[in-house]
Image (cartoon, rainbow, N blue to C red; front, side, top):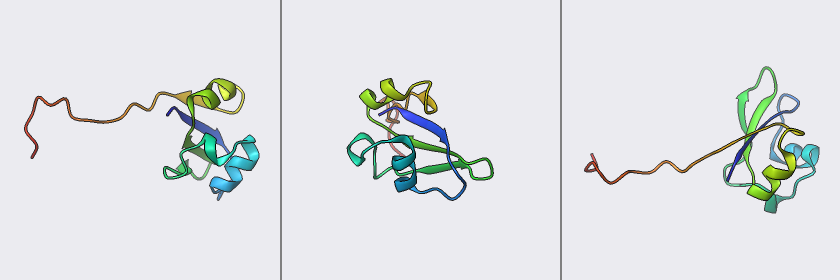
Length: 78
């Protein structure tokens, strides 16, 4: 899922982001939630569906790739 960064009022929660951006719970990763990146400026991040990212890119905030972090299998686990 792509990662969307947005500016919302300080203290916002996921429900606030959904309302402000006109999104449904089906369009976001609710388990990831709304992450405060810079609470003083109201900058937040949330993971959204690819279709939603295409719709919101440039209008609601910045969309970034959020590739999964996984082992390459080349090194034994610690």
